[in-house]
Image (cartoon, rainbow, N blue to C red):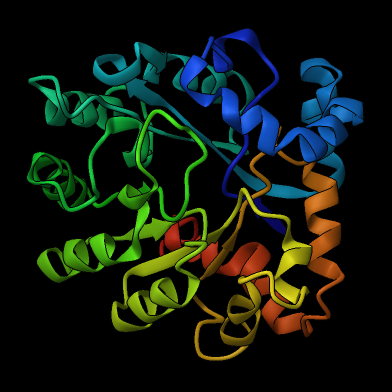
Length: 287
């Protein structure tokens, strides 16, 4: 079975103009060209068929609200409407603007009113570190609602905002303050991969999202990602969660690169399904 923790449907409402992310198109040109040539990119039908063919149990879609910083939104309603039309395979995470009053109330409405099941914080786009005090009410609301939080971690390629916002040390501070928070750091922390490994090792409720990175890099010498493979096979094997980040990479190609890592069957299942199922509480079990 498969759970894809990061995907974006090929629909205009999920891809509004984003000038602040233009440098991403340069960096990801190669992998995005593969997505453009894949069946999943041939409209919604191809996208849905890909996950049917892969036997995906769940696919996570994420809203974003960057109204204050970049005038960009993928609204909660857009995600909720897609989930309602194409569920139960699809799971939505909310996005709120912490610069605006009422962000925690909007987060609660997205969960209790729209049926979304987590919160997405792309902190580099919010121009905040994850341990910014303005995010504390959102973490407290996530604990109250008993839903997980996705927090961007590692380098970002937007030259409109500093890459230092993604250092794992900020997540360490969050988890020290909120040990009951169920959180995932994604992407997996490059160029501070070992710092993220230490942070995840320290905190039982912090997971690592293997997304927006070619899985084959985990086995490539001197890539900087090799420790994820070493620790992800052993002491952190129950912390690793797969996401294709489509359209950055075709979902089936990302799974194929996971398979090429030579994981044993138990670890492969943990990475591709069981850890995410536990994190999302799909089986009613605690993370």
